[in-house]
Each structure stands twice: as C-alpha cells, then as structure tokens.
Length: 79
Figure 1 (tube, helix red, strand yellow):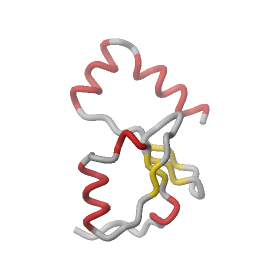
Figure 2: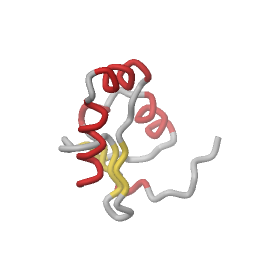
Figure 3: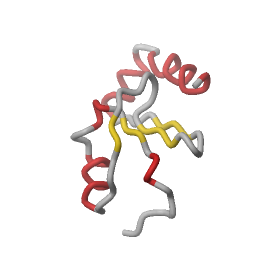
C-alpha cells in the first residue's frame, strides 16, 4: 500500500512506541523517525499541529472502564 502524502520528516514519536506495528511499518518504508518522550499522545506532527493517541482494543476497553479515556481526551484537546 502507498502512504498518503504526508511529510514524515517532522514526525515525533513517543519513546514508548518504539516497538509498535506502526513504527515498524514506517521504518520498513525507509522513513527516518525521531523519538522523544511526549507528555501527551503517541505521534505528533508539530507543523500540522496534529497529535495522535494510539490505542489497541484492550487498552481502549480499560481506558473506558477506568474513565482514563476522558482525561486523556481532555489533555489532547488542551495540547
């Protein structure tokens, strides 16, 4: 599959995401990635002001059960 036309050169990825499938996919496409501990979110495109919080189904379920998802959403909105 082709990647959408996105400038990945400024993408910042949270250090806790280093071994995830999306990161492995981007690396397999030859994209140079920058890792840094992000206070909020997992993927950040600063020039586009896009912040992404990635969830696997089990984490989404736990986040909903424990009401963390709402706190995380508020933090994403404020960032």
